[in-house]
Length: 552
Image 1 (tube, rainbow, N blue to C red):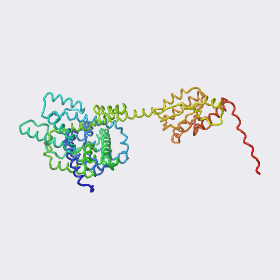
Image 2: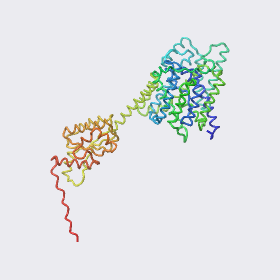
Image 3: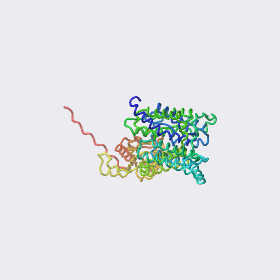
Image 4: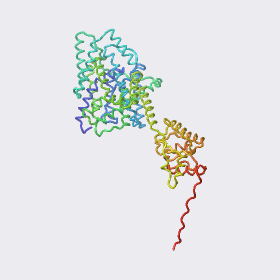
């Protein structure tokens, strides 16, 4: 932190300017008010910067978390949100101690992009009442609430609010393309506030102002007997905080050279931040991708930048609360509308949808589920469908191919014996995984083997065997035995032998050794079996050893 203080201080101030309207807007959207958003940005931003696992991460209230909090606020009120935040923080600390951070990297990209797209749509719908200048209708389904707000606007239009929100959004989007380093959100909000003050002096109706002042919120947690009803929402909040924070830290790593975050330490820092934030009246927090990206682009080199961001916002709370309370809700709605638009990476969506139909299906399913149900169900549904499609793709790689054994017959046999061996012995090569998703296809294919005397299963290319695969293989061998066909196995790997032996699959192999190390050795065992069964003519006696001359 002492190496590049000037760069870090400038980057932190830049992030604070960008974060101010976002913190206000997300606080209002969560249902706890603008002061809750600022408290979260200050407290969680400072603690996550100190104890987190990324040098460049900036934490605070986010749109994704707001989406999860809205139904909690509707069902349990502000006290429910504070309690959920505290429980989620404890869960994050437990995940950190269990070293669960490494597992978050296995979330597929279509699921991440899908719920990001869904969250952007939900955030945009949440801003409809504020952008239209109407009171927020009752309900926790954003689409229904937005529709009721549109109906109310049709009865009593408020074109001033619409003009303010659309102007703020347009200035932010156009300014980001023209001068990405300039905080146009603050410029647009300040201009909208000035216009509102002029209209107010002229006697116009207030355009959805924030509550006057930023008073210290009174803390109120739910009774312990009601905690059971909040465990599921707390799990959802903790999962989202972990996923979004680690994703944001990974984005920061990708934008720099030599920076690598510690995922378990990041979970620990986010846990402490979420434990402390409710104690100051704040909402649950996560690592914020947009603010982290601004921090990196601003030249941040250490945690000092994120701490400066939190300190600057604390100064706003202490010194400029009366000014902040004059910001119209329509202006903050415009800020969040622009934020929702900028969350959607069209290039990434296009690349994923063009990759495979499975990826496109997972992305669309996750986005629609986020919009129709909620984020938790969306992530679960996306992971389940992605896992099922991945299993199907892996299962399709498993193959059972018949191979020619002529080249593997050891030398020293005449052409007639080679022809007889090739006639009575058939070999199959198993490629890929022999597990539950592909095993039953093996059973069907092996059961349809033509009438021969010996079947050799070459398993050197089998990548994995689970209990289902071993049981199915044993069943196939038993079916062949009932048809009078002897089965020999070659090339079983040591790591696969345990699964086969546990279900007795190798006990069904025979006669002689249970399995052979190579195909030529298995053919030798099959030849001896065929001679013993009388299928082949009696084996010629081995040639006599030449007499040794007496030594002189």
